[in-house]
Length: 304
Image (tube, rainbow, N blue to C red):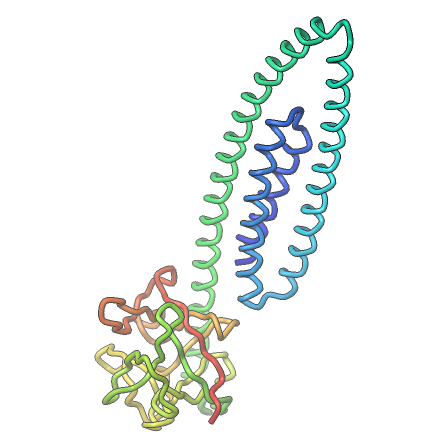
């Protein structure tokens, strides 16, 4: 969200540079419309960034966007003053004996401006193409960054497992809090049914509540309040809530923002980990090794 918001602000800034160079009313009106659309797009991205609770970046980009918008207002006022002077000049010219000669000069000037407007349209189209290519590059870089992030976490988990195997003392588990787990896209809650993990419409105060148990390496265990069993992967690789203990097959990894996070079960895919996603036609929870195809979940504190 931070990258998209920053890119939207930069797009707005790039169009403002064209607005300042406009020479006539037609050019200015076109650029004003483009700048207005860019400003609204930037505001929308900033609102999404604020919703995802990134206050530092949000404040910086909001301040920059406000300054750019004030700059647009100043440029617009300057153009209005120039337009007013032009109207006054044309009014004086019409009462002058030399009005016919001036009319011819004005027609010639308008032809030149029409040609400039065409150049401006071509320039705006080229700028839009460049912005599109830049956005594609940013998208590719973001995907690569996600892959590196995922690979780093996988290597860290494997190293922790090796260290744990050589240690005589089991990893310490500490109870942290009670939470509910909601699938953001559908608004449904994670629950249990005969040790199976399911999604339900209505929140149940016990079946939809999970206790969070923390390990020092950052991995967590999810223990259902109703069944008093941990959620994890069975020996057959099936997602289940049937374990009485918090072992490696019950290890989960959550992103930094728990209220907008992907959920990874660390033991799946031969230790590489798999992310949870939902099959929308029947709301079945599935495991997908691809982070890009994973769904977002809200892990919020539950009142118990």
